[in-house]
Image (cartoon, rainbow, N blue to C red; front, side, top):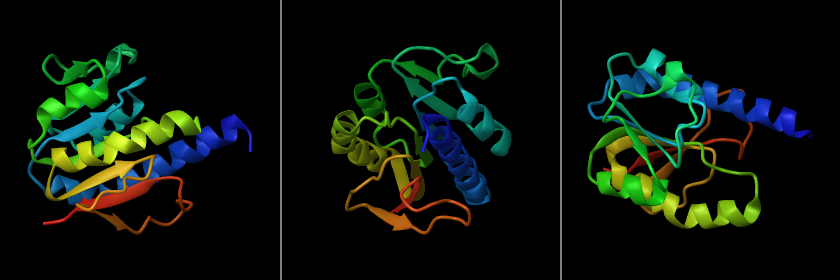
Length: 160
């Protein structure tokens, strides 16, 4: 599969999953945590699907389109592993993490800290959506929605 096809497949899965969980997340209290702002496309999508919700975005550097830059106080720049850890216990309704690189060695290192970070940010019953698997005792895997291939995107609920 070409890298373009893989990207399209990932973005399609991401959109399907985020759209499928939006109503449930809308019914919960708590902020949304976007781990990996990137160009800001997903941030913009979440902002549209969950109007009025606080979305705190994290990235190493600001690279987002100007229309997709979070307001002051909701953009945290620095190493995500370190900066997001300061928000442990915030009681997020949703943690979205699309920070995989497609490079096995790097993604394996990310998978050592990302699951614990996601669990620490979520409220009981909150959802984590990720392009990488999140193996953590507090995170229960949920079934994917129709149209999302297995192992392309992942959904978890934090245990109560």
